[in-house]
Amino acid sequence: MLDYIYLGMYKFFTVMLKVLPERFMRNMMYGIAWLAYTLSAKQRKRITDNLQLAYGETFSKKEQKEIGIHAFINLQDTVFGIVKRDGLEKEKVLENVTFEGCEIIKKYQDEGRNFILITGHYGNWELLSQAIAIKCELTLVGVGRKIDSDTMDEVLKKNREQFNVEMVYKKGALKDCMKVIKQGKVVGILTDQALRKNQSIDVSFFGAKATHTPLASILSRKFGLDLIPAYISTEDYQNYTVKIYEPISSLKTDNQEEDLAILTQMQADITEDVIRQYPKQWFWMHRRWKGFAMNNEKSNNYEK
Image (cartoon, rainbow, N blue to C red; front, side, top):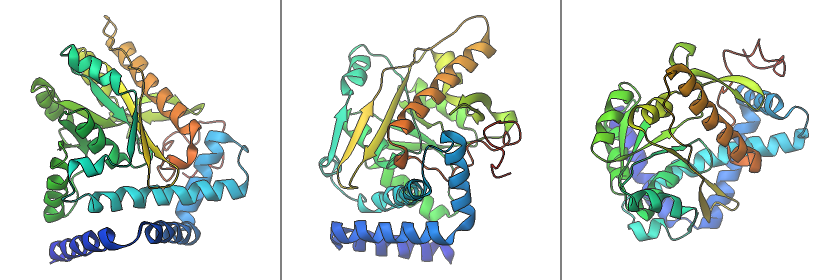
């Protein structure tokens, strides 16, 4: 029964988001984000704790609030964007997207070399994957969590596939990623979520210890694939910029543990650099430093 309710809501919003004026949508997103930030004491505290751990007293309370509100706006923009693009022509997806650094990917394609795309929960990350897949004419395979509703999971699967994006699930992700790499497809990985310590590698992130997924590093080392960072940002939620950064070269020596640690730290470093450029774009609700709160000198008040 719930599946049909979810599907009905999805179809309703598909229509509404395509007919509502853009200005109205932006105002509505800001209003919802302000309300969510104001009413959710737990999320507000987490955002504040994360910002203070990362930046200390750099931001005023007013600035922290604005960053927190934009974290909620980015989440809405990402979710609403999925719905709005359902059935949209590929050319329309790219209409308001500009690219920097596409020549980096093109060079790999011209040389017949595969690579791994890495990014984070920054800006409209769903649009990022679809825009790159369309622009660079490649099949991008993302790694994500299967949603609870089988019906909606299938709807989102079809939505993504129309723009050359496929998905594998986190459970069994390593095996599935190896399979699609052998098929010549490009794997895309969101690298900025906290994981259990037995599933992760420790990194320094904003000067504090954090866990980090080793998946991209393991695949890079095993297949000799470079890691290409890419991130998307917007200032007005109408026009978007995809920036593709210089690759992180694959590394394979006799010391596997050290190789993976170096590759993983480099991923954390580029993510931090990107966030510092425009902190309003990152998903500050993540418990990014969980498990290390008591050990980080900067995090005495961090949520346990």
